[in-house]
Structure formats: structure tokens, C-alpha cells
Length: 302
Ligand SMILES: C[S@@+](CC[C@H](N)C(=O)[O-])C[C@H]1O[C@@H](n2cnc3c(N)ncnc32)[C@H](O)[C@@H]1O
Image (cartoon, helix red, strand yellow):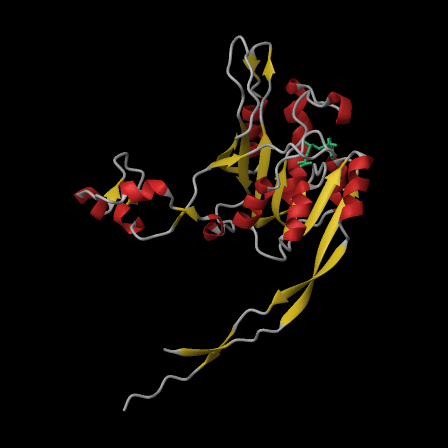
């Protein structure tokens, strides 16, 4: 059946909301409606770090401290939503702490699915020498979900196939021409020939991003590209993004620019005031109307 397209170009105004809340996330999250958030992206205070700016939590108390917050996050997230937690365990007496691993296990007991772990490779990490380890150049981005079926817009984060494709796809073997099923019986398979002539491919689960060096307003701001990538991957325009440890508001600024509603919570009044000065509670954006398709009755065959 054929259909003819009548495009309506006129735009329409939509309100994009930004809520900035001062206080302890554990309590303030209770004010949010259940199943109301599409994406949570956050970087909570790491154990024992930044004691002088906003206090630190002892590594052995970290899980106990975080669980009431994740309980609320589980309540406010929609079943189709995703929670991305940026975290990295610190070194205590020459050993990596295990609180992140313990937290994952406890969050699973709480009802979360631990879907994936992305790695943030910090491209511009400063050099150094330590007696028993090398410089730390990555952090975890843990992905949790409520349900196995969640919204994911993979095409939004596709990357150019790049130079490797020119050499790898030039001389294809016989195996490359057919579907090569996994030797370990995972049920997955690949057909390399499918990628010839394609200009874009899906990315890996490693994000290569420089750390934020220019944010003078916060000691631990993450780069804009970090929330941006997850907002593209897991939300659409007009969806709602939450950062319960907002800091300088990176997640909210990016969400607002990308026309997503956002909610930010922070316990430090200076951070809250700073973000409130920059972001209006409601902004009116002009959206292009989705094209309308007019159905045409199929002609009867004679
Ligand atoms: C690592 S920083 C987040 C930085 C943020 N991603 C940015 O780009 O600026 C963690 C933030 O959590 C806030 N915080 C610490 N404990 C909190 C709590 N119990 N409730 C809400 N915010 C808290 C701190 O004030 C700090 O700004």
C-alpha cells in the first residue's frame, strides 16, 4: 500500500522544565512522583573524597549511605528508564576498596538489574608515578535498569566507521561473507560483509572523553559530553532527566540544551544558587511538527 506525505512545517511551542532542589537527596527524592523519570545520570560524592567541600563518606559506610538513595531512585524511575552511575573505588592502604562491587550486589537485591558497565577513559589524565600502580585513567559508568525492556536509541550515538574499515573491509574472507556464529554458543553472530559501504557503526562501551578542566565552579564536574552521550542514547526530546547529586549542574545544562525536562538536587546552597541563576524553571522551545502522513486508499485491481 502506498501513502502520500503532506509535510506540515509549522512549529509549535513546548515548555521545557528545570527543577532545582536544595537538600539531601535521600529526603528530597521522596518529593518526586513514582515512575516519572526517564534517565538518571549522576556522579555521587566518592568515598572519603572532597571532605573539605561537601563532606566524605567512609568507604566502609558507602553502601549503607547510598542504598536509601538508590531505593528512591528505583521508585522514581519509569520501567522504561535507565540509571547511569559514575563511580570509582578509591585505594585504601594500597588496596582497591570493594564498596562499588558490594554496592552492585546490594542494589541487585534492592530490585535493580545491573545491565551494563561502560568505561569512561579519561583521555587527558595527568601523568604520575606511584610505587605500586600506574596512573588511574578510567572510571566506571554503571548502567542499572528496572526492567529488561528499556528505551534505547542506539542510532543516535553511531560513530563514523573510520580508518579501520578501509583496510579491514578491503579483502574479505569467505567467513566474512556469511554469518559467523559465536564459537562459544552465545547465540550471537556477525557478518562482516554487512559493514561494507556503511559510513557509521555502533560504538563500543568505552567512552574516550577528556576530564573537565575549565569548570572553576565545582571541584568534581564531569565533562558535558558524558551526560550528553547517555541523554542521546536513552531519551527523546521532552523526556525527564534527573541528577540527584547535581553539583555545578552539568547534567541539567546539557538536558536543557537538548530539550529534555530536568531535575537536579544538591546539598550545597552555593551550587544550587549558581545553577538557579543560569537556568530558568520553564523555557519555551519551538519544536518542528512531526510530518503527517495522509493515507491513500489502494486502487482496486481490475
Ligand atoms: C561529584 S559531585 C557532582 C558533580 C557534577 N556531576 C558536576 O558536573 O558538577 C557530587 C555532588 O553531590 C553533592 N552532595 C553530596 N552529598 C549529597 C546529598 N546527600 N544530597 C545531595 N547532594 C549531595 C555535593 O555537594 C556535590 O556537588
